[in-house]
Length: 480
Image (cartoon, rainbow, N blue to C red; front, side, top):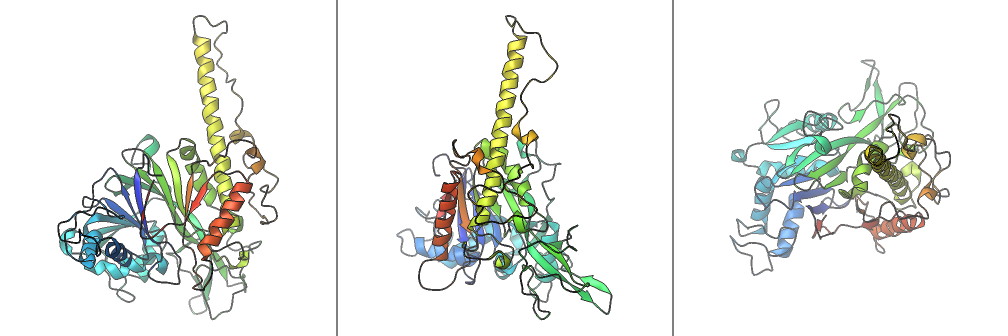
């Protein structure tokens, strides 16, 4: 996707562990900028400096341009003028000056470890670096990372060192900013604006304190659900012993004092200010089919009109495991069968958006014909356009997704009937899906990412979705 591309994306960390040098971290810049200070935004920071140094050593150390003041001719940082001699010093410059802000999807260590470890190299003269996220995410980072216990308080709050400043985002976008298609978006970095929608990253168990008589929960990392006191219908992990607690697990509801809440994560819409093109970068996310609070559908409904207009052509989304994983062990993540079900919801909404556009066009043509001096028809004040499928049948699907019935068992949420587009043009043609947060097995044999892409491709072809799946190379950039 390098023709008329608007974005350049570097996936420094494409995995979800267990290697600490390759966990989630992405760099995004608008191609309308020219490596000026603040022209790049980081989305998550599990891996940051380590990934930048790795790239610079690959493209600089063995290059004839490996000298101070040279401009890189190749690699993800091509066009960047090197201010220093070594890869480490140039990486520090990129971190301090080129990266304008950090967008954090959720506060798990594989998404914030680099932010904590790397931040001390920020120089006071540069001013505090913005860390933007939903309030719950920033609360967790503030209380449990930069708290002078786990790590020094490097923020500008509560008497900290002032190297970071927290920017609390409005979920769903701030309507006070922007206009028309960009309403709700706020500045991410030079040339890029962003809007954040919350998604679900599994369930966590709340603990009862017998001394205070209150329920203890990580209030900074979870949000309450109206259904949280109810027994979920499925996808509940058998790991519920009192001696172990995992914030991304789905334990059985035990005694009356136990409660379950949803772990909050984020999906960032990034919009190029000049072209209006967009991409979405997801944090860790679970399928709506197993979630206490299904939230992905809202992301797809927001994205669909943009996909229909071809202004949104790519997403970066996790797919942690292959289809061999059982639902009980997803722990708030996706696998191919579930990601395909989610993309089918997007495809259905894209067709809705296209039908609505066609209906509006027909209505305009009809009104124009009626108002024509030669028209034999009288102007009518009633609408004669046919009712769109979006208004007549959305939410009324009674059958599970065709082609995945053997893979998925549905509860309170039903993906659409894919026969709607089975014999027509693929609804997600020219749409790219970049797979991140793959859980490496650290074993010989086929890399799990290859298996995941093969399964995704097979499912997508069976359903005529039309999208393509890619594994990002952490030593190269992606043009979108």
